[in-house]
Length: 176
Figure 1 (cartoon, rainbow, N blue to C red):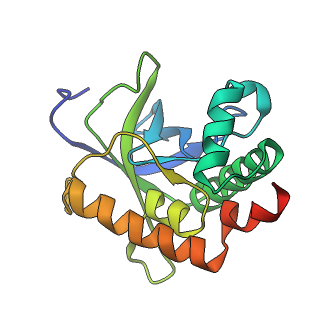
Figure 2: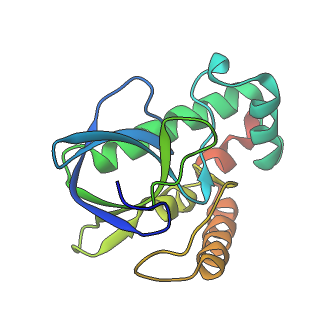
């Protein structure tokens, strides 16, 4: 692994199917090795009640304007499916500095995949645009640009649009 401050680009990554994968953390295979990555900037709702304490699920519900615990879990399951559908069968690129997530075996990363026009799409942006992630974790400048501050502003703009359109977890407000 590279130093914790130098960016490393992993090309032709593949999603490894695991029950522990969710919308913002998942196992990948690249260059004959497997790693678990967590997206910079975003936190997807939990997928099962026991995966996090009730305080975390309640906090996620408050973020999405007070949706209930069941709606949080539903949104988390949607986020897991969304990420899996985007990454499954499609090679993607991971940019990481091998910065550990708290005391875990996961590392923070930016994930880029081709869209239908072959242009790169940032997975965190896609999740926020779909209303399936909150802006709530460590951020970092993208090695190919833009700055952390600009990315954060862009994600806020995407979030406002998703909320106004009632997408993802924002759609679940009626299940409070």
